[in-house]
Length: 76
Image (cartoon, rainbow, N blue to C red; front, top):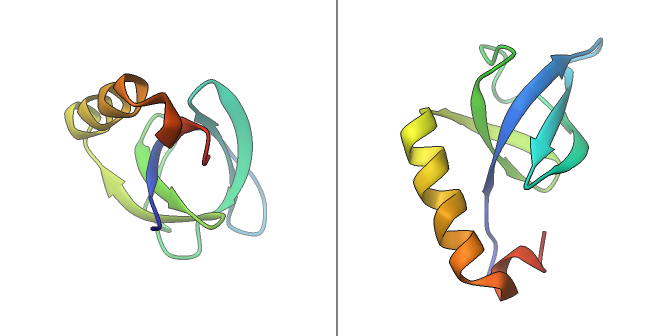
């Protein structure tokens, strides 16, 4: 099973890359599929790519679910 995890964009870098906060861990992801993403936005991250910009409420609900099922967070 593949999951896309919500992450908050904290910095936009060169070459369509961004630093995101993913469950408290900093990761670098590609914004090639979501060039409209801005600092402060939440994006769904899968395989190193931000694949969709989502609203904060959706992101928080999803993160809360992941925290309720720690075995899902282990896959991140």
